[in-house]
Amino acid sequence: MFVQKNNVQAIKSYFNERLKSQFSENEIKMIVRECVSRRLGLSVSDYLMSDASLLSESDLLYFRSIVKRLQSNEPFQYIIGSTLFYDLELKTDHRALIPRPETEELVDWILYDHSTNNSLRILDLCTGSGCIALALKSKLIDASVLAIDVSSEALTLAKENANKLNLKIELNEMDVLNPNSFESFNKNSFDIWVSNPPYIPSIDAADMSSNVLNFEPSIALFVKDEDPLLFYAVIATQAMLYLKKEGCLYFEINEQFAERLSHLLKDLGFVNIELRKDLQGKDRMMLAQKP
Image 1 (cartoon, rainbow, N blue to C red):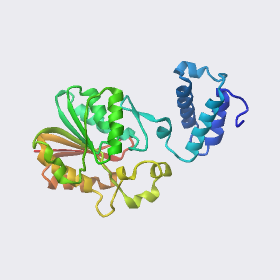
Image 2: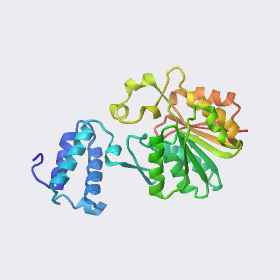
Image 3: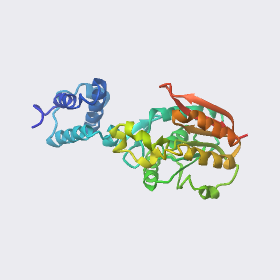
Image 4: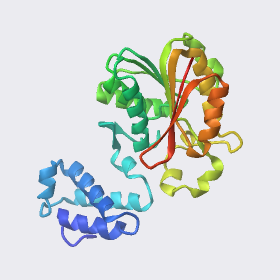
């Protein structure tokens, strides 16, 4: 047996010993708590009193498999199959990027700006897991929310999340880089467009951690080095056609291209362009308004 005793305390020690070179003490405590609570169906208070609880052989093998997957740098959110985003529990797997906390800040901004108007028509471009669209729909109940992505796998995941949360959004497979894809929309018909598109130049991959590079979909991460604003340029050009007057375009951005993107949006005719930092102090979000 790989642990001395078949109880929860032994599993805590096993996780700590095997993972201490990869994670902080607090991270390991969180990982163990999440794994044990999910596996045994424990509440927070029950978990705190569970050290002596006995585990079956299948339980022990389950926990060992999690440690092995973590040692191979697989993201924890993929291993347990879910993550919290804006108080919503979303299914997460290799079909889409793991929703990030900074993206919650983008949702916050949109909701703050439009808190007095619930009857909005919203388009989420490059939706991935559906996290932005679903978070907005959960707070703007009367809004009409459409989410699009080029990946059919990502859209299937987004649909599973929408069904699980009982949130009604429309999901369409669509390539935002193909201008003809937008022709099914009515011009001047959307109040809000929002997008967290691919924005990492391929050359930056060398500096990224293996848990991202080896597991998360590269199609949702990278753009060609010679054209890092490709998605922004195409989306903004189309937004000028399909947003209503004074409609708003929100982006999550790569901090190193903030100034270039601001100039691009201004050149396309957008006004009231605003850049915001995330809680880490990075230039992370941008708003532009159609005149």
